[in-house]
Length: 210
Image (cartoon, rainbow, N blue to C red):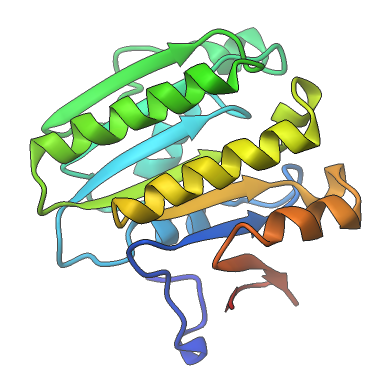
């Protein structure tokens, strides 16, 4: 069941990317994240998940907590940072999405956006090669920690390039950002890169598109 109000009539269409604004403390983002990763239950999906704030195991466990099915194919790119506890960072054989194609890649340097971009392009190519009819869905969780490793200008350019690439392959994508970690100008600047924004309003999630 969608956590977005049906009355909004809004949805994220193939080729669009939205920014999810939510504090990383005290609010469970998992339901809205899974909503955005499953925009059309009638088609098979190929999922790309870029994990920065949480470990791949964390994201997979959240998937199984909130979804009654798995994507047909899935790739996780783990951007390793020093922010995670040893317990959170540990992954096991069970911390994988059980599907036809399941792969995990690790990027050891969060400051190397060029390498991350290459990994994203390669992962998208591999997922598309499994079955071009599958809908590509992408989650980037989260942009906020990367501000500690690269400048705002560098990250803006990176997100611009990645979102353009995702649009070209008709992916349905969303990027997380913690609004409490940034000033209003930074949030406003990054909002220009997206087709819409998702945030909580009076306890409910709301999607606003341009």
